[in-house]
Image 1 (spheres, helix red, strand yellow):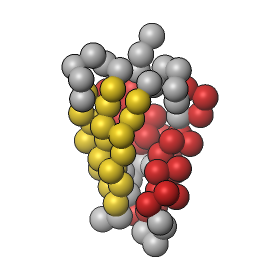
Image 2 (image 1 turned 45 degrees about the vertical axis):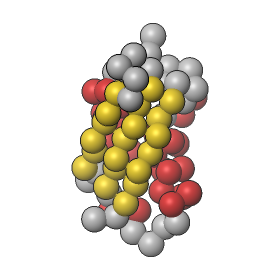
Image 3 (image 1 turned 45 degrees about the horizontal axis):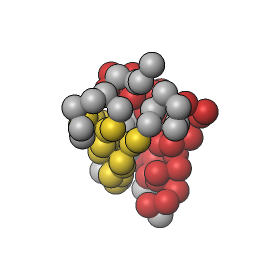
Image 4 (image 1 turned 135 degrees about the horizontal axis):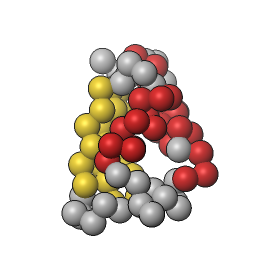
Length: 76
């Protein structure tokens, strides 16, 4: 079963409690999402490391329960 936008937000927030998160269902199918994540944890990190922090929060669910997640990350 695919992840809901709420589940995606909860998963990211568990890893980055201070994050301001916006989730968008790109295709209206509950399977392709975009997320904007703003967190102090990203300060000084290159974009690849910022994205890795978010993707790591999903563990083995990335590519299975969560098919596609486009990310935009930034420090506040």
